[in-house]
Amino acid sequence: MHTQEPSVISPVIVPRAEHNISRSKISESALKVLYRLKSAGYESYLVGGGVRDLLLGREPKDFDVATNARPEEVRALFRNCRIIGRRFRLAHVQFGREIIEVATFRANRPVAQTAGSASENGRILRDNTYGTLEEDALRRDFSVNALYYDIRDFSVRDYVDGLADLHAGVLRLIGDPATRFREDPVRMLRAARFAAKLGFRVHPDTAAPIAELAPLLADIPPARLFEEILKLFLYGFGAQAFEHLRRYGLFARLFPRTDPLLDTEEQGFPHTFISRALASTDTRVREDKPVTPAFLFAALMWEPVRQRAAELETAGTRPAEALHQAADELVFEQIAHVALPRRFATPMIEIYQMQPRFLQREGKRPSRFLAHPRFRAAYDFLMLRAEAGEVDAELAGWWTRLQAAGTDAERELLVPVAAAPAGRRRRSRRRRRHKVSAPA
Image (cartoon, rainbow, N blue to C red; front, side, top):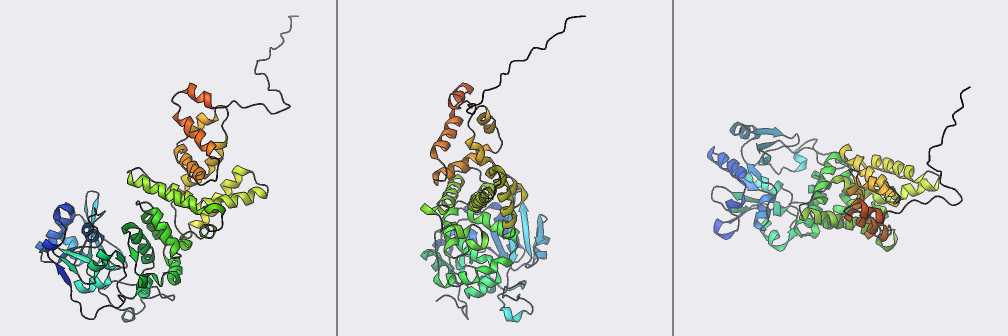
């Protein structure tokens, strides 16, 4: 059992010769921060995901530093530093586009010692107490994220059995899981994210309280949940993250209108549709192609929008108007749970509204449609619908061939001419001659 914090901490110190972290793999900016803090007489350690990824032989996305220097002391050392945060103040040292986050050691003070620190439902609200390196290790979330690289002798310090968990492929919360999730419910999403990203299994003790505590996500600001959604789904492991969220009952808290529909459709739709959309996004990330939250949210919200539009059509609303109204209704409802900035919500709705236009294949309409600035996103969405069996594969194939046609002449061979409705004659476009009266 790993849920109890040890009363006496005996850190494991791994010397440089026994681990694979090299300074050549650490950004120059992070090294500058580490060395300047050290030169000023402070403790300074590389910590968190950067150390974890280096030990796993991966390239870190960013580097974080832990120190006993207070934020104001860090700012005094770096002109390119600003202090952020309310719940816990952090120093951001900026080098061009790279930001090195510097955090002062935090204490692992029990909740009962801090009056007024918890809300009525048990979520912990305040956490701003400085501490020692040992206390800081206990205060971190997962053991594999609590490994410290010491710039003084290039050793790795481990206070919480993080190295053992790293080698075993286990994701384990430090301390009592229920307490740690109440401190910050977003840790439940982070558990799903790290499990998907690293290919680790979540320790049974860590997983046990998630389903019961998932409702605490309702207390998290929608804007913060939006940022967490991007980390879950737009970094190359979205398909696996989706399955973890579903397994632990977290997806329902993020997309309450989509989740109950995932197990009700025949042949796996819309579960298959979302899985394909996320797998496609993962492929684009691996190929270093652009991805957008608009397309992601369009896929995650499509089934409730589609069903609502069908209800409106049955009630007599025209199809195009029904789709527009359904999208407006459900996007407005969704942002109460997960914020979606307008710059993404607008193109998301346009992707929906453009789907009926793929049925219009006569005359010059297809060529005009191809020129639309959001055509490609709408077309990719159509392809997903075809792969999931929602629309005819022939329709998707026709639009694929039309784009491949290199000349107007080739496209004309594919585009059918609109036929006049039965029983009606096409009007002649010949100009009518006006009768000229003879001069009197």
